[in-house]
Amino acid sequence: MAFLRILVDSVVLLQRCPKLFIPKILVAFLLMPTFILVPHYIIQSGVFGFNGAATTAELLELLEAIGPLFLVLFYGFLINLADFFIINPMYPVMVKRVYDKKGVHFGRALFAVFRRIGVILPLLFTVMLITFATVTPVAILLTLALFLQSNFLLSISAIIGFFVVFVLFIVFYLIYPISSLEKFDFFKSLRETTRTSLKHKLNVSKVFLITISITGASYGFGLLIVWLGSPTQLPARLAVFGLFIFTRLMVSVFSTYQYVLNAVFYLGLEKNRFLRV
Image 1 (cartoon, helix red, strand yellow):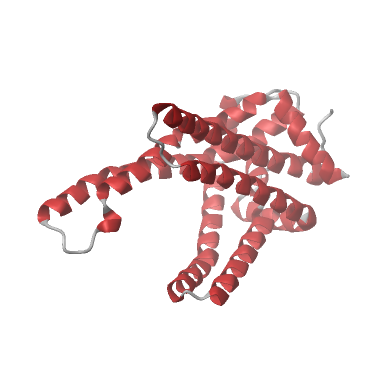
Image 2 (tube, rainbow, N blue to C red):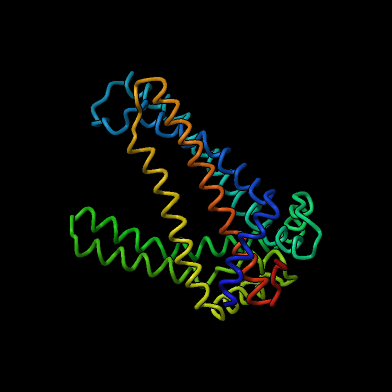
């Protein structure tokens, strides 16, 4: 019943405080240019049609298109970094403020994150390194499977990949609320993150299934845009563009729920604090 309670509390919290959607909506719309310009510059560069025997003029044309492509990718990388290191850690602070009947305040949440930045940054960077170290062998195995066109190897790499993602999710699920809300140093924060996450591993596993479903729905909206393609008629183009904006909005809604649920999970199951419905 406690797990069901945190699911309900997360929805009620968002109904009471729709301001919580704003940071993720902002991130989603700041990333919109990357989703539009990256495919544009890739097509313009003709990189997939490059056969190694291009003239100097063709190489210059390729470089002219690749330059803006890298700038757009770098812009997207910076937005994602800000989201990962600053926006996401703000959610536990904002949720706790609602529990304390203080209301959502972006400035104070940001200030609270900056006060803990000496712990949050190295902690999240460590998790990134661990993730990279564990996922890279799986990516190499997957690449090898595709190169050899081996369905057996492809299945094995997919299963291993899913297991690795599942274990990482279980171990580090509570990293944001612990790093943002508790006054632990780096090593204790890392230790408490793994200890507390594993303590609630059964319920974290349930959250993993919810997260997979939400992620799948997000990609489903994206695939719908790709399936519709690029129509030639102006009304159809406007309709597809409107659907694209709707897709980005839905992704931000799903993402907001995930990070609110993350904070509510910690406060409810670890601190025994529940929202008064």
